[in-house]
Image 1 (cartoon, rainbow, N blue to C red):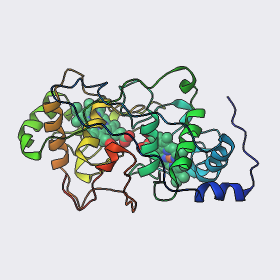
Image 2 (cartoon, rainbow, N blue to C red; image 1 turned 90 degrees about the horizontal axis):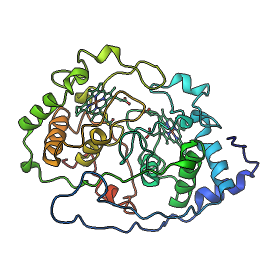
Image 3 (cartoon, rainbow, N blue to C red; image 1 turned 180 degrees about the vertical axis):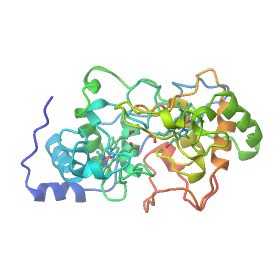
Image 4 (tube, rainbow, N blue to C red; image 1 turned 90 degrees about the vertical axis):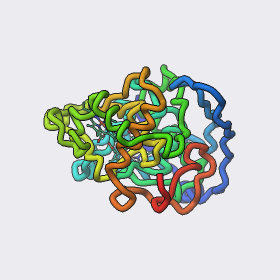
Length: 294
Ligand code: HEC
Ligand code: HEC
């Protein structure tokens, strides 16, 4: 596939950027009663791209090209300066997904990454700067650069996104799950990223990669309980970070989440400021400000 750079005049780009800020609201559905399967319980409405593809292409060049490259290969001069480097979008290894390991992310997952950015990396947040139709057009530009989107669907998103109250989860119990699920081998005995396997890990492109030091509070996918729950439930594609087996119960997952979060505090956490509350995306409307407790 080849992506031709658009010859759109700059004026059209700015028109697109300044376009209406009020996007369609996502249909929300309350959590159902009773046990929910890990995957498949939650569905988000699919909406069409509002901005034409040429406008999307121009926006991609202007806003993403410097890091990800025109074709999406992440091979730009600037990329060499960044750690972690910008993703090679053509490899389709999306870390942040609500879907099973090995599956593609949903449009909403990509939208979320563009909206909030990836804390702890150079990937900026565009949610405060671009109207929703422009963000959706950029999601389509990302999908154009990964051939798998032409043949595959994302699959069922992770169902459980509502954390029980903090008292329902016991930190010490979570530590037991952390040990049982083998997190120590990479993240170390108390989560400082210094497990026995830590020095040996490589990503899908053969580059050396470190397990996260949980005390530093860096979460690419966000530090709300639901974000952390999601990260180890779906794994981070393209990295050695696995998904925990689907048999692990929701209670175990929440306890594990509490344990991971107990290793950092609000002051240490890396977060991205947002001035507009993102009410259009239901899971994100529960996004917490850094001064709020998890
Ligand atoms: C300043 C550099 C920079 C710019 C500009 C930038 N990105 Fe990124 N982007 C990154 C980096 C770095 C990562 C990798 C983070 C990581 O691996 O944890 C990334 C990751 C991503 C990912 C992968 C997320 C995942 O789940 O793994 C997507 C998709 C993405 N960027 C899309 C975009 C789009 C679309 C734009 C333009 C609107 C853009 N980026 C602009 C640096 C940038
Ligand atoms: C094989 C090694 C390995 C094992 C085992 C492992 N991790 Fe990781 N984990 C990683 C690496 C590497 C990263 C950093 C990936 C990156 O920087 O993109 C990571 C990142 C994370 C993150 C950060 C997610 C985010 O949003 O940035 C969390 C949370 C996490 N791991 C939790 C766990 C838990 C819980 C377990 C046990 C169930 C576990 N990990 C087991 C290697 C591992």
